Image (cartoon, rainbow, N blue to C red):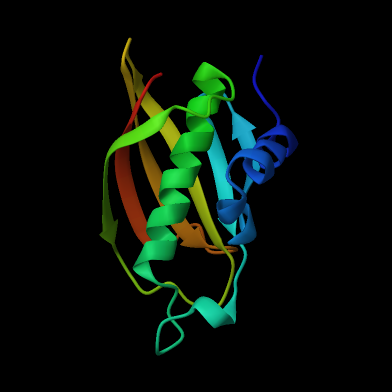
Amino acid sequence: MRPSPEGINQFLVDAFPAAAADGVRCTALGEDWAEARWAYDESTLRPGGYISGPVLFTLADSALWFASFTVLGIEAMAVTSEMSIRFLRPARDGDLVARARIQSVGRRRLAGTIELWIDGEPEKMVAIAQGTYARP
């Protein structure tokens, strides 16, 4: 059974409270995909008002973790084994959204692609990432 965004968010609060405190949450799920959001926080911005690369990377990684739950169920020990990101344009002035899609599921690993944009502007991606998660 596929978990709900609310179930994932509660799991995040219980199992990884630092990520939940940083404003990361799951907002939507489907078959082999998940959407995550980072709540805009001016105190974490880089000079010039840019959302930092580490925030984008964290959200991409979280979205793929959440997407892995659509295949594995909620599994704390599914862990990142590889992740790369390409920054396409500056991310500014709004919540950050990431949608992860699982492309491949094997016995030991699953792989996916993550697109990131500022809320309300999905046609203007700010980054794209690809990653692999090791199955427990």
